[in-house]
Image (tube, rainbow, N blue to C red; front, side, top):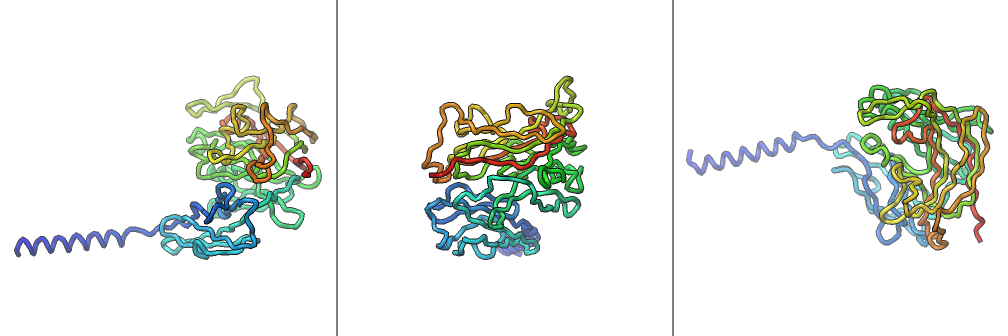
Length: 379
């Protein structure tokens, strides 16, 4: 065999080997929407992408009578039906199905377009659905709101999905955030600070405070960057005047703080306290939402004002509160920005006010019902 023939043989062998390697590489089994865009300057802010829902928030001058053609970025190799770029009427939400590259998995997304703010201003926590987690090993409550027309207007966010990973819960009432009887009128929301067990101890995150808020929860950041996982706020087109409602609170027996080594150490003489407040802020290209690292930060230039309960305290009976919305020093509300949807509002509650820093008392329980945001009447 000549050198020429040997070279040809080795080249062919290399090609066969390379081809075999390519064929043996498994196809991608993921089927997620990673990003969404709309042609033209129509989006008011970044799309909100959740586990099975996408919300596109468009400018007020965009007509929903005309079809819109969302374009989707998907996990590698995945396909979407209807195809990306298909013009559709979004007066009602549309359904898309994403199929993985290997064809074995698919996920259904509801894609909704919002223009004017549609969230309720009154919240009675009567509506929940059970969300299955860990392949059916457990399920937790997800609160949602129904508007006057019978349409779902808002889904409350919580960190229940992350708590499922601790394997400490099975039924909704064993999660940090759940619905219970005994409200002012019917049901109420209950938030309880829970132990995260051995899983949390290994991660130096020994507790999970019950939390509930207007916004979205980024479960992909929950372990590595828990403060960044809470995206507080939704577009708001009204000027708030006051924030009112009812609460009960019972702190857990032993307040503890987590040190740098992950030890959960008792703090003698300290008692846990809850959080329950409203915050109103301006969105900018650099700040689309507040999170656990900057919400209520007095140096945050985007925050316009808040409504905070000054005399929070433990009580076995329902405590009625009504607090004014207060503009922060030097801040005003711009009528044009309000009309264009450049402001967000968030209602945030937690069973341990320092729970995002893994400080609090296991067993601390906050019950909340009949919340109301009162707004200035539009001219």
